[in-house]
Structure formats: structure tokens, C-alpha cells
Length: 381
View (cartoon, rainbow, N blue to C red):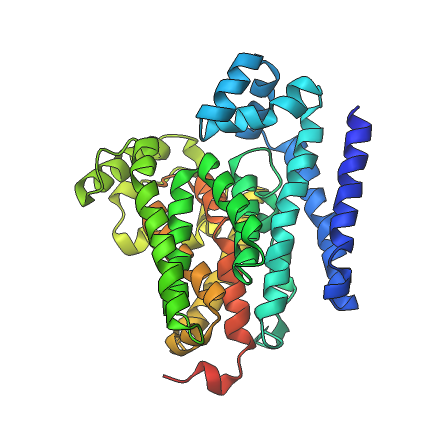
């Protein structure tokens, strides 16, 4: 059964790739096929060399009863919803954890592909940094693939954000994608949906070349949905009320718990000043934090991201941001909101990298936009 299922996964992946052949140049299509193989190699590595929550998500589903499945799929969010989602392939079909990882690798690659298509659609030229082409090189960053191929929440959220971004470029024609993205993300991590609605709602409202009526209508819909979801998110997160004191208490408690877990990558985030918390979320681990090969690769990535950020900030960046399409602006707002919230509570570098991964494509696509602009456009006030 496992062999047949894995063959079906690769056949589905091949057909999915073929659906974009007419939309891409021969070179970009060749790159996407290479990224398909590259992504699944990370899936194989993740299956055999990463021992964490993903195994539990799959094995727990194997021993669920039918009643537990029905209860979890209809009434639960977060971890128990993931158990229920894995119940049919893991328990009913009896598939192995490797098959499950390949299934999630396909889901993650679908989300990744939509980010790739978004970049090709929105980036106006050839982005270069110090004479080097940034596209498609940035799409080969290891952590972009590593955390979007494992069984669990991170892969599903990566998928949701990818199809949500793609759907927003033509929201009326791609409404089903938006509904699937928001619904699934809500069932996995409700607070991420709230951040998506706020980030992209603000971007759409402030976007250029969009009729005022449409901006008001879209922003009102996003804001209204966010207001409806807020009490549900607070209940899910076990926060008493929407106040600074409650959020601060929650963040401090979370930081204390996470800084004590997995001591090798734990950091005392609670004692950090705010700027260092933000730096930790966005650019650590650095080379002084290396505890193994994955951390070394992450440190190299972070060094590149930091170099791109410094150059960007030194060249008066607000003009290029204002000129960006609203979808790119939305990804940046989403990144800012996520950074402000998660940087206050994630006291573990391993978890930090994992959580940052859903915001990373937005940062990369914005860098591609910025570095594709002519020099005179970048430097305008």
C-alpha cells in the first residue's frame, strides 16, 4: 500500500507541475521541476533524521478510535485537529510515517509553488545583489523547504499562506482558495488567521491603484472577520482578555516555558530588550549559536538575510515599499505583526526558526521586489 501511495503522490506532484507549464518560461519551469526534487529530498531527510512532534502527530493518529476522530475533526483545533486529519491515512489506510511525510511534502510544495508563481508574477525585473542573481537562488534556502515538508502544523500553515497569497492576486476568481486557506489555517492555528486578516487588510486598504470603494469594502470585510475571530483566538490561546497586561502575562509565561525546553537551543528571551528580541526572531541562530549542521545552515541563511536587510535599510526603503503591489505589502505587514507577537515569547531558537518559516517567503519576495528596482527608484525619499 505504501509503494502505491507514494507513486500516487509523485504522480499528483507531476500533474500539479504540468498545470503551470503554459504560465512559465522554459527556464522557470525547469527551475520549478528542480525545486520539486530538492523539496522532496528535504522530506526524506526530515523523515529519517528529525525526531520530534511530527512522529507523534502520525503515530497518535494510528491509535485513535473512530469516536475520537469524529470528535476531534468536528470540535477541535490545533494538535487534536492534526491528529484527526492524519487518522484516515495513518490508521484507516495503515500508511507508514514515511508515506505521511511524503504526503505533507507534497502539500508544502504546493504552497511553495504558489509563492514561486507570485514572485514571477509580481517581480518587475532581474533582482541582483552585489552582482549576484537573487532569483531563483533565494528559493533554494534550505529552511524554506526543511520546515514545509514535515507532518504537522507548520507545513499546513505554509500551504495555507501560499494559496492565500496566490488567491489575493485575483480575489473574486480565486475565492475558493481564500476560503480553504482561512478555514484550514483557523483549524490549525486560529491566531495566524487573525494576523493574515489584519496584515493583508491593511495592505489592501492602503494599496495604490485600487478604487476607494473596493478598498473600503475589502478592509471592512477583513476587519469584521477579525473582530469575530478575536474572542475565539483568545479562548484558544487561553488569554483572559484583549489587553496589554494579558498579552504581556501570556508572553512572559510562554517565554519562560520555551526557554527551559531543549536547553541546547534555549535562550533567555524574557530578559532581552525589545530590539534584541526582534533580532533573535528574524536573524538567529548566528554562528555563535551553532549546535549542529542544521543550525550552521540556518546561520548562513540568516547572515544572508541580515546582509540584504542592512543594505535595504541603508537606502531609504519607504519609497520602494509604497510602490510595491498590495500583495507584497500584505506579506510585509503579516511579517511585522508576526515578528512583534512571536518575538516576545519564543525562547527557543529551534522553535523560532520553525515559526518564522511561514513569514519567510514574504520577506524573500519583498527583497526580490526591492533589489529588482532600478537604483534610482530604490534611493528616492
